[in-house]
Image (cartoon, rainbow, N blue to C red):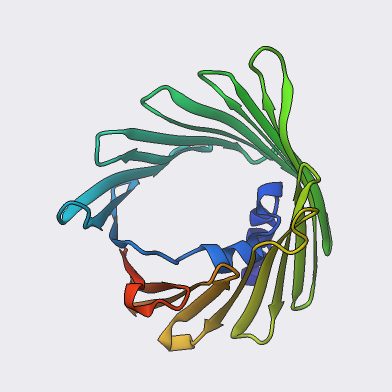
Length: 284
């Protein structure tokens, strides 16, 4: 059906680049958890989407910090992905220009302090390439490549320093495999350490993931175990625990049309009395 084709397209797009090679696990243990109190309101203003985000800060008294963002999808593939004003007056700009016929996307991310990255993304069939350059200082250049075919994906990335000649700063290589309810990805940094990410779908409502660090000096380093449970009308529950003794949980629930809340709690080493709480509210 058209809906299945659309879902397949979305999956292929999100997994097109090396930076997303372990995203099925990263999404479970990385997203939604928070120790902040925030509200986000989205609204339409003509052709633009306006987002107002407010954070409650308790340091040195209670205060509210606000950010205002603007997004605009223009003609001929141009998009103002983000124009954001931060609490202290800083401005962040993200734009993109997409050429679907050639599989190209040009990006710019910068701010008013003369920091900016110019990038290009290329997708064609099983291939996904990226390149990013520090536009103003011209001291850094990064690139990545990913080749995916059916259940397998393999790729790598490299960061170069361009000060006083071109030198290799860091590099990573990795591979992933997916079949049925099982997914696994391994990535390495300079071939000296490796991260193994595994996901297993126990059922339609329950997924379990692990992420572990390995190196010669520490064969089994940091370990994170997480799960996500779809409680249907009661929301989605995520939980994770780390080998350092930190346990976190979050509930993501739509309480009204286009109103979502995500209360979260983090406990370190079983110290419940000093647990850290957070909640996010998104409207629109």
